[in-house]
Each structure stands twice: as structure tokens, then as C-alpha cells.
Length: 300
Ligand code: ATP
Figure 1 (cartoon, protein in one colour):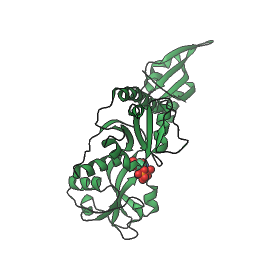
Figure 2 (cartoon, rainbow, N blue to C red):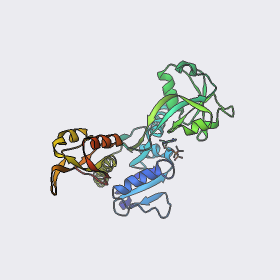
Figure 3 (tube, rainbow, N blue to C red):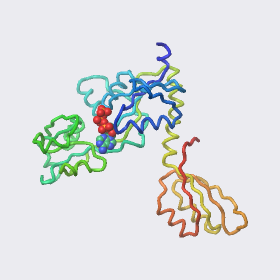
């Protein structure tokens, strides 16, 4: 219908590692998402946007083919798909609008603990089980080594044990799964995060308008996630030292305290991670009542 044509369609993972964070990002952007009836398309009640809930591996193709205008997907899935399409001469164009701050993982080569590892060259000729043969092949070409691969879409980590492969090339975040399967990580070949991507087709004026509203909101949510609002009482004569300790902050607000002229209240926004170590140093300078509070939204 014509009304659908004006609704920005965004593909996100239906269920899995990226789905909760994708949805919560959009909710924080002000979207009221109607997920009640688990359909393929979830209507956003208060904005001209529909979310398409699909397998993560389908997202790059949906965006490249223009079925969806935008998508949230891991760099790993995106780049594997783009390389695959290049090989088959299909359209592999997209724009990466921005990297999001979740879904961090690395694509690594791992070998059974008992296999001796003597550097990249010793991987030459190995048979590796992987979901990412194109990224693995690219790594091989860059390093002048050849792999054989066995493509698996799940349970990659059991392949060496059952004799399917000499090792694996799989996504790792903590390394617990590798350890539980008697594998050791020997090479990191790719670092990945979730990304917001757009197809290369031009958007209608209505959709572009929606996108122009959405992007600053996403930026605002991402910025707010790392930022903290900090309040403390500080000795007036240590003001410069106190401010110098604050990471990524703008000019602080300094307020008088009732019945104290040796101390002041300081309020400031810190745009970087605020560590315990900094709080301890502030305390040593004579600050007290140090409060670090989350910020929900930011603009300007
Ligand atoms: P599909 O939705 O097609 O089933 P999938 O099987 O890859 O995709 P998940 O396991 O939920 O689904 O992974 C989705 C994405 O999450 C990965 O492509 C990757 O970008 C990211 N990710 C983050 N940490 C990890 C991890 N430890 N293991 C696997 N993926 C991770």
C-alpha cells in the first residue's frame, strides 16, 4: 500500500545475541514497538517505521536488495555476505551509517589444546570448520596461506573432536565456549560489532525525513550510555586539580554550599567511562559525597 511505502523498514534479528539490544536501542529512541503478535513485521505505533524481525544472516541481503531500508547486523555477518556476493557478481552495495556499541566479538582461529602452534605459517593446509569461509579465505590470502574449510552454520566448536576438521574459525567473546571444548585461540582474524547499515537505493522524501530524525536520536542514546552525571563536594582550593581528573568533561558547574566557604559542590557531565580509580583519587584530593549517575538521553 502507499502508506507502507512511506514507512521506513528496518531489519533486526528476531532472536539471538543482537535482538534485545537492537530493540532496546530503538525503544530508547522513543519508538513504541508493537511486538505482541510475533509477526514478521512489527509496527512502530508512534513513528512511520516498521521493524522486520528476521535471522541475522538474512539482514545484509534484505538491505542490499532494497527489501529493507536499514538493518542492524554484526560486521562479521555483513562482510561475509558482501564478499560472497562479490564472488557471484550480485549487488553488494550498502552504507554503514554507524557502528553501534554492542555485539562486540572477534572471529578467531582456534586449535585443539594438544596441537602445537608455531605461528601463522603452521596453519597452512589445515582444514578449518567455520561459518565464515569468505573472511577466513581473505585472511589466508593476506597471509599467503591456504586453508581448506568445512562450512557449518552451528556447533562449529565440536568439529575437531568429531574429526571433521583440524581446528575452527569462529566467533569468540569471552572464550568460555572454546575452553569448554578443549580449544585454544591462536589468531584473531577479525573484530566485529553491531552496525547500522543502509541500502544504496535512494529513500523517498518521507523516509529520509524519518531517518534524519532517527540518526541523531541513536547518536544521543549511544552517547548517553557512556556518559555519567557526576556530583561531588570539593575543597575550593583544589578546584583545578579536581577538574583535571575528570575524563572527557565539559566546563563544570560550581555551586556554593550553605554555610561552608572552604568547599563547593561540583556538577559535571563526563562523556567517558568513569572508573573507581578516579573516584579514589578525587577522594584523596579531599572530595566527598561523590555521586555518579546514569544519563538517559543527551542532545546538543
Ligand atoms: P541468526 O540470527 O542468523 O541465527 P546467529 O546464529 O549468528 O544468527 P547469534 O548467535 O545470536 O545468531 O549471533 C548474532 C551476532 O552476535 C553474531 O553474528 C555476532 O556479530 C554477535 N556476537 C557477539 N558475541 C558473540 C559470540 N560470543 N558468539 C557469536 N556471536 C556473537
